[in-house]
Length: 221
Image 1 (cartoon, rainbow, N blue to C red):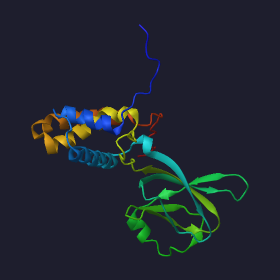
Image 2 (cartoon, rainbow, N blue to C red):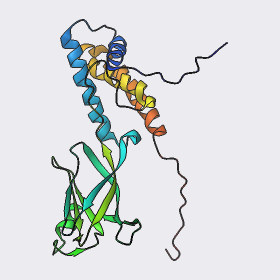
Image 3 (cartoon, helix red, strand yellow):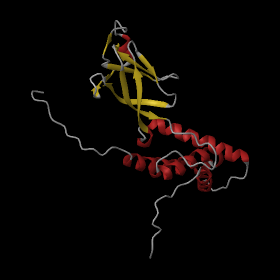
Image 4 (cartoon, rainbow, N blue to C red):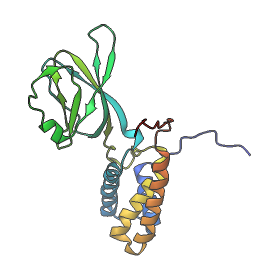
């Protein structure tokens, strides 16, 4: 028998909502239920941001530094910074130098934060205004290159597709069904929560880097 030859299956927000309501044993019959479902879907996305890495939301960004730059304000949809380097192009070629992430307390204890040199450390302020504080402050022009986790985009219009990797579609439907059951089908909450956690665990185990790693014991320890 012939196969379709395509691998483009996806669900728009309306399909996700309909499938989730069906798992609750009902169909949406009012505008309020649809609005409630979209709100719950956005809450599922926020829940995922709290659960750890979502590889499709990791992206590389850059910020230009000038002499005296000691902090950089990042985009408001930043969840966290994973790693960073200082790119020095003063010699005519790009040289990336790793910088160390430090804690808030370590940065606070730096006695003279106005010292200028090539930045070697950075502190990430995870607040309403997301900032990276550098130490030392830049003594010339550099580029801060960093990998960040961004927020998953909001559901938006019902005709949109969800900003998720295809592997997470089953998990997304399960999560929305669980959230809707809390409001409309309390008798199914326990079962749907179990399905949600199982689907999320399965997707999260696959959503990871698969580079090899080796551990070498330190002599004398």
